Structures are given as structure tokens and as C-alpha cells.
Image 1 (cartoon, one colour):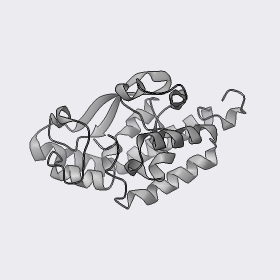
Image 2 (tube, one colour; image 1 turned 45 degrees about the horizontal axis):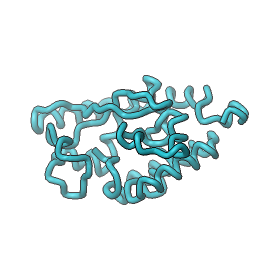
Image 3 (cartoon, one colour; image 1 turned 90 degrees about the horizontal axis):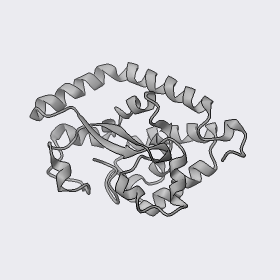
Image 4 (cartoon, one colour; image 1 turned 120 degrees about the horizontal axis):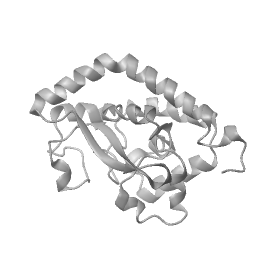
Length: 203
């Protein structure tokens, strides 16, 4: 990666500036909606608004990963695999998951420098422990709010398929590719395809 021109590296300064600008504007514009949803989550069962759990980021470092809570408190102790109709999902959680709004708090992770708008999705430590040397290549960049795997199948893909797409993204990074993924993400959000399937992505 270091042999590429700086603007073709997936950790370049221009990408970081873009992340901060878009994440900050996104939070500002959606704040009334987010506050309303936060109140709904709290009202439904009195539990916490956010689900915060450690994820593995760039260079294998752990960071607190933010999501709107969509399941009953303590549900993750029953496992991370979730299917459509899972009784652990709250009413507001179903709405949040349908439109992927539960992921929006990760804009805070972007502003904090732990994530990028575009990149491999952050994973759990036990998954990283089973990576091959090649698969560990996805840890050389900040994880993303969305990525190539999310616009090419999301959770309907197997875990190895998603990792290969993440590595493809890193190897072929460009700002144009980031913009293409961002636009494709907006299109993917309006359909429920791939919300449930292989893996643990939708907690």
C-alpha cells in the first residue's frame, strides 16, 4: 500500500477530511430524527438508547462501537446470530433495522477517528483471531460505516466472501470508488435484501 501515490492510499488525508465533513453534516441534518428515535427506544422498555460493544479497528486496536439498541436488554448473551422475526428485537428495533438507521450513531465513531465512512465493517475479536495472514490485510485501514461487501450482498454473503470484497476494496481504493459505494449504499438501504443472513452484522 505504501508504494501507491498518497491520494490512492485508503488512509489518506483527503479521505479523512471527507469523512469528517460528511459525518458532521449528516449528524447535524438528522439530529431531530435521531433524538426522536432515541426517545422512542427509551420509552419502549426503559433500557439504554445505545448498544456499545468493542470492535476491532485499524491495526487490530479495539474501540467502542456505537449502535442504536434494537434488541431487548441482555439479548446478546443468547448469541449473535439473528434471523427475521427474532423475538428479541423490539418494535422500534424492527423499524431501525429495516432502514439501517441503527447504524447511524457510528457517525460518532467516524468523527472520533475510529472509523471511516467507507471501509471493511468492524469485527469482533474472536473473528480476528481466526484470520489468515491474508485476511489480516483488512486491518490496515479504518473500518467503515459501509463498504464494498455491503453493496454487493450485505449479510447474504458468507464471511469469507465479505472479507475478499474488503480486500478488493483496499487493493483498488480511489475516491471515485468511495463515492460509488456511498451512492450504492443509499440505494441498498431502501430494500430489505441482505439484512439477515450469514454472520453477526445486524445486532
